[in-house]
Image (cartoon, rainbow, N blue to C red; front, side, top):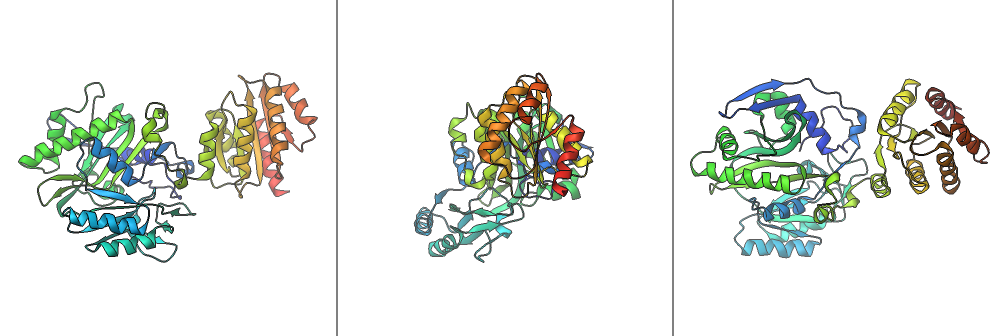
Length: 452
């Protein structure tokens, strides 16, 4: 899967990182099938990308199930939640003709094959011809936390495994569809160098990455798929098969409002058939209202509890590594607040935008999220009273602070409509609140409160 070149954390929003990768090396494909390279500057990746998760992720078994519905060729397999189920389902695959079985731990992170479990078991991916061995591997995986280069510090517990048939293949390729601003819409990305980290390929051999934009009003055309199939080295009847798989994947990409479909590897089996192996799918939260069945598959146990709480409360939250919790209304103001905190020697613990029409309930939930972070040593609230008046916001802050019983220094800066009334509410609240007249003063107060 795509991963950031600069992020220090493993909890990377896949779509944001995809943009980082695709801006590092971008190629365009003309109608003639000739590829022309265009190398862009590597973007600066802000540390906030290390934790932000705006897109829905699915487990591999869920992704595979969706692909089957769109006639995308995948390996036959089943999901199991117990070692006994894994053994029985593996035997079923053998009875159906499978010569070898693969078992994969189901978590929301890559690098499973090279990972290890907290119980000492090595590898989140195993192969065997014996269903009993598959069951034994499942027993070691289920209930244990898998640690990979991409899992968060707390790891991810394996609650399900995928068992599927293994296939022999001659070539490993890479194929993905994603939304790319450079093309103002969807694009197809491919490489002959599949089965490995695509970021390494982009860095060591950018010419090996092929990209073609797709007009969303026209859709993917036979000409596009034919040119890409030929560029990937398909020959004879394989070209038509590869075209069919590409077309089906694109239809799925559009129909389900995907932000990304990534197949690595995209393989040619020894039978000559093209298979999609190890699929990674991403979906934009903005599409949840019309993709209810897909979003019902969300596994919140794989996510940071603060992210889950924020999404349920309608808040935009991004956890960072600092010690000053921030609560702001408006994304631009939030970014500015984080910058000013850093300017005065502090370190923001999060990005938290409560929005222009935040309710008292949302403010209270925001405080709960901030105080649940053990690294937070002070909280800075920076609110501009535009849609909401400052006195109403101030009362909400006071009530929420009383309900939460905040034990760290609380700094509040208000500006806008009824700011004088708002500051009066804070002053007479009986809650220990440090007020500030401007953002500079607020940031200095928050930093000083920690050092005091």
